[in-house]
Each structure stands twice: as C-alpha cells, then as structure tokens.
Length: 327
Ligand code: HEM
Ligand SMILES: *[C@@H]1O[C@H](CO)[C@@H](O)[C@H](O)[C@H]1NC(C)=O
Ligand SMILES: *[C@@H]1O[C@H](CO)[C@@H](O)[C@H](O)[C@H]1NC(C)=O
Ligand SMILES: *[C@@H]1O[C@H](CO)[C@@H](O)[C@H](O)[C@H]1NC(C)=O
Ligand SMILES: *[C@@H]1O[C@H](CO)[C@@H](O)[C@H](O)[C@H]1NC(C)=O
Ligand SMILES: *[C@@H]1O[C@H](CO)[C@@H](O)[C@H](O)[C@H]1NC(C)=O
Ligand SMILES: *[C@@H]1O[C@H](CO)[C@@H](O)[C@H](O)[C@H]1NC(C)=O
Ligand SMILES: *[C@@H]1O[C@H](CO)[C@@H](O)[C@H](O)[C@H]1NC(C)=O
Image (cartoon, rainbow, N blue to C red; front, side, top):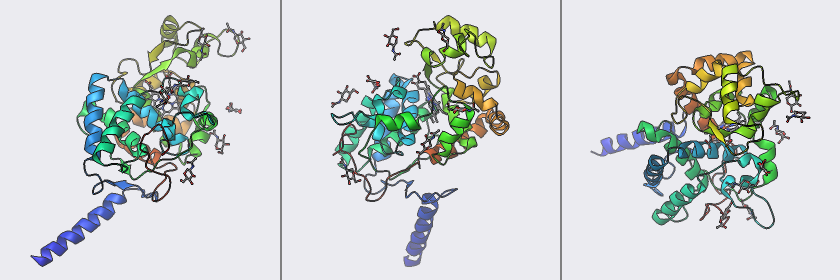
C-alpha cells in the first residue's frame, strides 16, 4: 500500500518534470498545466467560451491567432497588446500595423469568466495564448498543440514598439529574418509561422503596389502569378483600403497546409509571403510544409517557441484584473 503510494509519487514527480520540460526545454519558467491546482478549470473555461464563439463566428480564429503573434513580438507575450491607450501613451493596438486586429471583446469575455472562477489567478497573456490555440483547434474538435502557461502580464504598451517589432507585409527576406532573429526565431520558424496565413484575410492597400505600381512605373510584381494578380486587381482598385481578400484562396477558413501550395504557385498575397521562395533554405522548408502532418508537427514547435518570447514569470509583472488596464 505505502510503497505503491510512493511509487505513484515518484511517477507523478517524473511526469511533472517531463511535462514541464519537453523537447528543447527553454528555461522560461513556463510549464504545462500551470494552473492545475490554482485554477483547475482554467483551460476548460477558455476552451468552452472560445469554441462557442468560433462556432458562431469562424473568422475569429484568424483574429485570435494573429493577436497572439502581435502580442509576442512586442515586449514578449505579456498581453501588452490588450492594453488601451492612456492619456500619457498611445498603445500597441493603436499602431498602424494593428489594421483589423480584433477579438478583444472575446478575450474580455473569457477573462471575466476566469476572474469569476479564480480571481486574480490567470493572466491575460496566458488567456491570449490559450485562446489562439483553442480558436484554431475548434474545427478539429481537439487541441492541436499544447500551451505552456505561467505567463504574467506586463504594464507597458507603446505604439512605437509595435512599429519597430511587427514585420511589414512589404518586408524583404533579409528584414523578415532579422525581425524573427530578434525574437530568437530562425528561418524555419519564419516559414512555418507564416503558414498561419492559411487562415484569414488581408486588406487591398497592403499589397496594391504589387498589382499596380511595383517599382513606381505602373507595373506589377513579376513574382506574382499573373492570373492571380488579375484576380486581385478585379477585387482591389489602386486606392481601395477597405476591401479584404482571403489570403489562402480555396481554403481561407481552414487551418491546413494549402498556404504552401498557393505559395509555390506564386500566389502568396504579401511580398513577405512571396519572398520565402527566394532563399534556398526557406524554399526547402516551404516544400516540406506542403504535407499537412509535417506542417502541424512543425507548427507545434514553432508556435511554442513564439509563446516563450520575452515572457514574464514568477514575481515579474502582474495578473491583470481587466485585460485592457493595468491594475
Ligand atoms: C512573417 C511576418 C508576417 C507578416 C509581415 C504578417 C503580415 C500580416 C498582414 C499584413 C496581415 C493582414 C492584416 C489585414 O490586412 O487585416 C496578416 C494577417 C494575418 N496574420 Fe500575419 N504576418 C506575419 C506573420 C504572422 C504570424 C507569425 C502569424 C501567427 C502565428 C500570423 C497570423 C496572421 C493571421 C491569422 C492573419 C489573418 C488575420 C485576419 O483574418 O484578420 N502572421 N499578417
Ligand atoms: C478601450 O479602447 C477601445 C477602442 O480601442 C474602446 O472601444 C473601449 O471603450 C476602451 N475601453 C475602455 C473601458 O475604456
Ligand atoms: C487601430 O489603430 C487606429 C489608429 O491608428 C485606431 O483608430 C483603431 O481603433 C485601432 N484598432 C483597434 C482594433 O484597436
Ligand atoms: C531590405 O529592406 C531593408 C529595409 O527596407 C533595406 O535596408 C535593405 O537594403 C533591403 N535588402 C535587400 C536585399 O533588398
Ligand atoms: C531588431 O531589434 C533591434 C533592437 O531592438 C531593433 O533596433 C531593430 O529594428 C530590429 N530589427 C528588426 C528587423 O525588427
Ligand atoms: C507610382 O509610384 C510612383 C513612385 O512612388 C509615384 O510617383 C506614382 O504617382 C505612382 N503612381 C500611381 C498611379 O500611384
Ligand atoms: C483610406 O481611404 C480613404 C479614402 O480614400 C482615406 O480618407 C483614408 O485616409 C484612408 N485610410 C488609410 C488608413 O489609408
Ligand atoms: C509595472 O510593473 C512593474 C513590475 O513589474 C512595476 O515596478 C512598475 O511600477 C509598474 N509600472 C506601472 C506604470 O504600473
């Protein structure tokens, strides 16, 4: 009896160690099931609400996945993106790259439920990380990747930092690689995380130059598939900044590897997509990612790395009560 109890303790301890330290084992202090004892229902609360909201509104999954990216690339995954501007400073989400960021009300709704169940316990930063996972996972009916938790919330959000850290759709390959390297992400991660563009939309003004005035001579981008360019011109006038088109035509709501199929046919919507074909190493990864199983396995690893960027843990930062305001 007692020895079997001991054995179970040992098994539990090693399971915990293994769980907290999966492949790569970055020393960020995040771990699986961080709220296991402090708020046992936390992950289920997030999942239930997100599944319900995505079922009502399928485009939400793209919004929440992109929200996680923008949060992590500015000051780390600390929910700084959720903060409202104040009289003293203009927040990240009011920076031009915020174009069409959305889903903030859904995060508020989840956070409210979390506060009711476990006041002051679950961070907004973890809420965003879990919501991104669950929103993409909904259509599969099971979690597509594990999310380590234990992030805490920052209290600074600056428009200027969003401008420097969020890569632009017009970025060239060198700049993209640099911007990812700044976050300890490599070329592989760049290609694999760009696969997130398998869902969602992009606005005309962000690629209009590729259609109408690529080098300032009224030309179009020669690296863009001519038939696709003609299709895009039919959707987007040169000055249209309100229309949005599906980034992965044919499967714009489905999280699959079709992004890479399109990309290889020179149908990447943004220059930042198209340039992934220009580099030997990156283009090899593009080839590999056409297989959905390979993409999913790789995406799991890369988004876990993304979720580790600059996190606050332990006594750092705070657990915000309301995601739009510091306590
Ligand atoms: C490689 C650098 C990247 C650039 C330059 C970039 C740029 C953009 C731009 C310009 C849009 C369109 C926004 C709009 O017109 O409304 C967009 C949409 C999107 N991005 Fe990225 N992105 C990058 C990487 C990522 C990453 C790493 C993720 C997530 C892991 C991501 C997820 C998304 C999603 C899901 C959308 C669709 C949003 C919607 O439908 O509203 N992107 N991205
Ligand atoms: C936060 O800012 C948004 C606009 O970005 C605004 O709609 C909302 O009312 C603000 N929230 C509060 C509670 O002030
Ligand atoms: C995005 O920023 C603009 C100002 O550049 C602001 O008017 C708009 O409300 C912001 N959008 C969101 C969703 O915060
Ligand atoms: C890439 O873009 C950056 C910033 O716009 C520019 O300084 C650099 O010269 C470009 N690199 C190449 C290879 O075009
Ligand atoms: C990389 O980070 C440095 C330092 O924060 C910054 O000055 C630079 O603009 C960043 N480069 C890119 C491409 O994001
Ligand atoms: C094309 O770009 C050039 C150089 O930026 C600019 O002078 C010209 O006005 C643009 N043409 C159109 C039609 O926007
Ligand atoms: C979008 O276009 C309208 C009309 O063409 C213009 O008034 C507005 O400033 C543009 N907005 C942006 C963000 O470029
Ligand atoms: C932000 O949080 C840090 C602790 O992480 C604290 O020292 C600082 O005073 C806070 N600043 C504001 C403006 O709340």
